[in-house]
Image: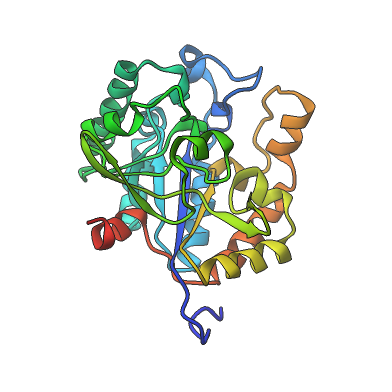
Length: 286
Ligand SMILES: [Zn+2]
């Protein structure tokens, strides 16, 4: 709308999508076991196509962290995403939390999903996001293994999470992480700066919870200083998807205000120019 008429220089936005189905939610009582997934009706295409339309309206390219399982079940969605100019990245094979894996299991998951996505898409995959942002002190090998598996960047750090901050003293802006295996670029999840604290506001349940006016104001303040990273899931654009069994608090967080999502995303997409994490890496990664 008015993004090109702004008289101030703004940082870019990153629009990221975790491409998983509604039944892949983790850490709740109702998550079905992997062996039953093939028998559960899939709806990931509905929300993903709604996101494709939204992005097309804004002439914006996104980074899509595909679950390997979803890519294998819907290779046509991988090819469609690439034909629309979006970036293909990995969200692991089966949405398993990193902190629940041994390093060898994690390495296999990271390599298997990378190869699968590359075989389907015919492009190189260099980006990774962990299921549920699930790295912590029990996964000190995480970045080394990711580099060993061939990844060039990661986007799993939430800079206001105690467990992530104690790990890395994580900054809210893209930063390199140095390991014995070399260097990897981290794209932290977007947070809003409030006096004395950083608040998650630009993705998932937080985006649905906070009012649009506040989100816009905080996004503008962020963009004056650093890139803004948004994350979203296809199910959030598919309000009629079946509900998974979970406790009342988590239910509130998972399903609140879903109808507000398209309008909030429109607002955020109007604030600046967006680029993919891969394109940003190509330009500034070294
Ligand atoms: Zn996920």
